[in-house]
Length: 302
Image (cartoon, rainbow, N blue to C red; front, side, top):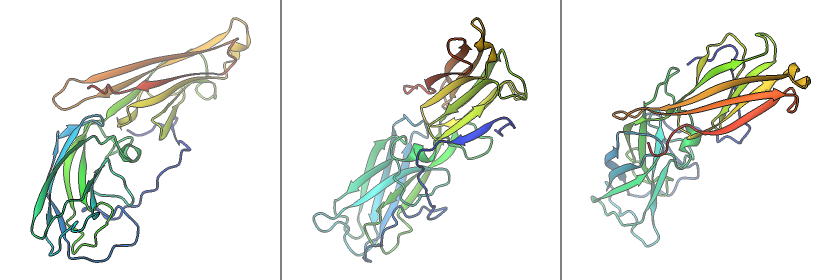
């Protein structure tokens, strides 16, 4: 949902992975090294399935596929030859340059021309670099989980084989991405003004974005912080700023926020987790006080 005029979005200073899209609408390269020598091998992925159809990051997915060799040369003919198949989650059915995905598997069995092999694996999309790329999985400005994403598979994941046709290495299947809707409810602040810096601030971060709300203000009492959060934990801080009353022995200032994580899978009851965080500045703590919690927004057993 749109940010209000008093809401600021800050980015943490941890190094960020720069991802360059290699191709849209049909996958893309996952390796930027020099291409291998051209062969007469042609790997093609067919019969790709993903279950369940809706999953949160902790759920175990079963991915099944067939790899055919449409070429005239055997893949993995000699001992030690192998290639990888990789799986990823994306918003639009793409593989990014140097992307790890959430699952990689080594294939070292020979696949002669005209033959095929079936494979099936299990894994969750919380692994690899997926949650780094999609901490808050939103496909629209007004996203509400679950949202439709895409699970992709790519044969010869890092381009070990120079194939006749690289364009048939991909298959994609839609999946309902079940994240957690994280909201913040302002519980009150007993000091400060609408225009001044003093008041009761909230800072919340999923490790990649930090959002700050300031109160008192004219903003709504409840705001959505992360619409479809895939991280399972967020850090929350309530900060009492510039409490001049705390300069007196019996003076204090206090404020509180309630953080609510709501997860809803199709066909299941809603799972809700709640954190109430109150903070107080007084003569002992000084005019500014920070109270922090590490909050699990989603039950891993849900």
